[in-house]
Image 1 (cartoon, rainbow, N blue to C red):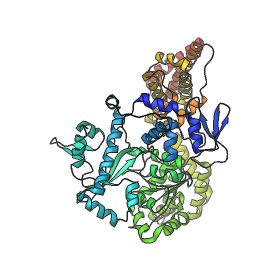
Image 2 (image 1 turned 120 degrees about the horizontal axis):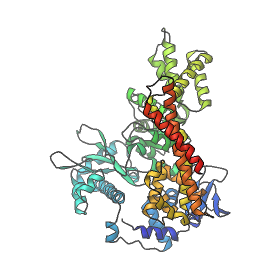
Image 3 (image 1 turned 45 degrees about the vertical axis):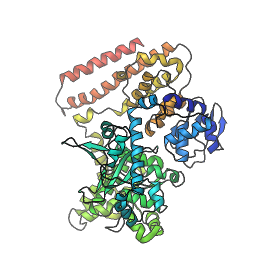
Image 4 (image 1 turned 135 degrees about the vertical axis):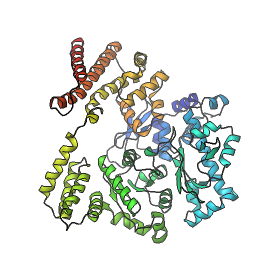
Length: 585
């Protein structure tokens, strides 16, 4: 359903965020100009959940969750964004009418979300009602799916060609269907539905919106499982199947079990086991690891126990380690999937596996690597220790590194001191083995530059300062996040912080809400404040550009890379400009 921005703004303005939240969280109390309580989305003893009526937003400084009034209702009730809008509209006595001009004015993303939601309902209805879906109903029954689970996950069936036919009748175009990832155009000019003759699993984002579909073949198609392609609303590496459905459970039980397949997740949640999610037919990514860590304090990796599954488990543990996230792993008997294990052994046995038989990451790695190396043979221990230290060095936490090296020492019967010597060599190599390509990567010290740019965003958040946005352009910003926020200012001069927040993904929303909370009304000479910030940012850009060149020039001086006269000239020019900018301050 298309709702105009004007109506959305009206509903947001009419819904006092502090009173809406207080209906769900009675402990929310006024604290100065803000309101405060313990976070309803994670367990804590000291209140860190802050609501700003003035800015129309909430933010938890503990877990990072943030948003406007719509986002809060969506999360607390586990409902899609559109349902939260309808709910608050009804409370405020605002009638939502779908007008023709609203539909025409829909953004491309909104239209795609609408089309995907419609497709999910179509597939689900076909599963329930269509005669041709009997094969899907029989398969689901055979796999042990209950009617309640089928309804909860909106599991569907895709009769060949029928979605295309239905969507065209509703007024959608071939182009829109392609953009939504529902169909593809063949070389012969025909349009083919990705999910044809498949059991369909709608994939939801963290806001409960349908963003894509996964399908399991029910015929003799070569590809057993197939996902719809990435689109402007769907990135495989940034989503997890089942996460939205288990969000309410994660408020109490902060544990996530990372599984491989759709059916694993569906059946695990059907058995009342909370926190079951799966990556989406692709290699596990750092983005997915960070998404899991945002909601879980305990992470269990449970992949298949065959060679491919163990390799995937190792890679997942490495990704968690590289991102300073602690994880454990559980193994099932080889050849048995989690859903099959549950059907055969039941929930209690599965719980015992998770709670009593999980292994630490280093235990799994040691078992796996010692299995590849005969420790009794010459060099066997050295190879095993070398491979294990490669894993240890991926961990950023010093305490974890110490625990892992102690464990390796005990398991391989090697002295800790020897392992530490080898570990330090790897650590030095990791930090000092700089290639020319590495030097082109943005230096972490550019963080100072980003902090200054964030100060400029906080300056522009004040309505009295919005005119200054016109004096900047997209090229001014080095921070992608800041450039994105600046784009909202350029698009709509009086855009409210809450409106911007509602349009950001979770990572950006948590960051931006922090800036909004810190932003204060500006007093004094606004032009002078702007000019000072502008000069500081430009000067910091020059300094960071010189720092990056400085590393290359040091390597040239040491004879490690060829001398580049142009780079030296550029370095000297930057030095001159920095001195000049200092004089002009």
